[in-house]
Length: 129
Image 1 (tube, rainbow, N blue to C red):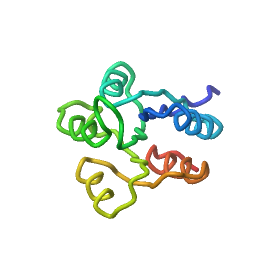
Image 2: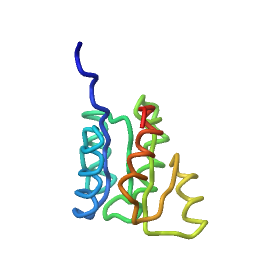
Image 3: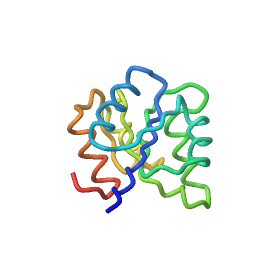
Image 4: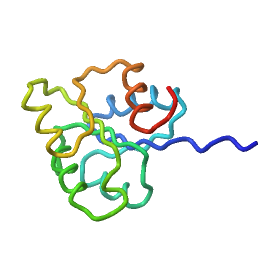
């Protein structure tokens, strides 16, 4: 019997250490991981290989995470509904609300433990944890 395809996750964060941390946790949990440095790069990656989940930072150069989600959600493409988990250092209630208004499914505050990251990934990709 063929092994099921691994769910692909696009991590969008300008910090290389954060991307590496998420990649290690997610790959250990059986996900395939792609990376983008900002929202513009993420849009390009989305169009070439649609992921099952987006993990997005808020504060990034060129196109921040909330702008990226707003632009994505306005598109009339199948990828526009891709689930999004926003993870940021911003911890005020209005930051969470701004992320939801932009189209985030969930909002977490950094730092995020690996088991929490993978639990949300399983929830949002419909995969058994």
